Length: 274
Image (cartoon, rainbow, N blue to C red; front, top):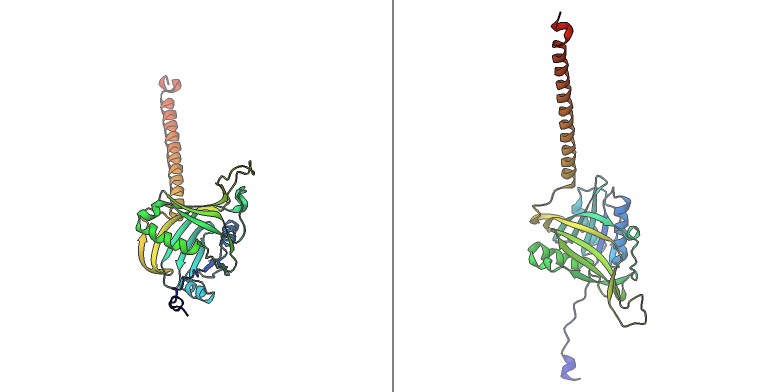
């Protein structure tokens, strides 16, 4: 036996990321369709039944451990209209809480793009992620969650789409594009790479980053975030102010009319020449 054979080659690290996907009770049909789209996109996802109580988030690391998962995507619905997403590394953290807005699912968009079910996607991150500390941490967590391992059980050995994460206005914009090798109008022409959107698409607003899984010390807090409930309350308050202003104006007008009538009565001909 040669000396070269006796030297053991360093064992290559295997990517063993598995993601637990679940939601709280009270999700609407659109939220449910978004979860189904993500399950279709990510073949290393294990879907679980809904979590009964929103106050028992400390149970999620245990549920992830029982399902042999080291990442968790938890969708929390509030008031049947607000959707929050928790992206966490279990069991030790960190975890990111994000507000999900402008959700458009695959069925709703009717995009022309298409990709093989179970294929792996390229992750494309905006360079703005590397400019802030919270951006670097979010990029790392999203790489673990959305990056499909090459040896995942349901994964196909093809790469035919790109998942893009862009930062604009301190929000994370998610898009999914198909990679076209040839121009569909000229199938026999020269190779020309282009992108066609598939869906889904949504916008994430980071709220808070915690040191542990679904709790712990706050690593980052977004000072610009306004809760949807307080935004709606402000809109209702503005409507109430407009209503009060209109009522005050109507009352002022009626007072002026009464005053004018009294003045006309005092100066009436029958009273002046009585």
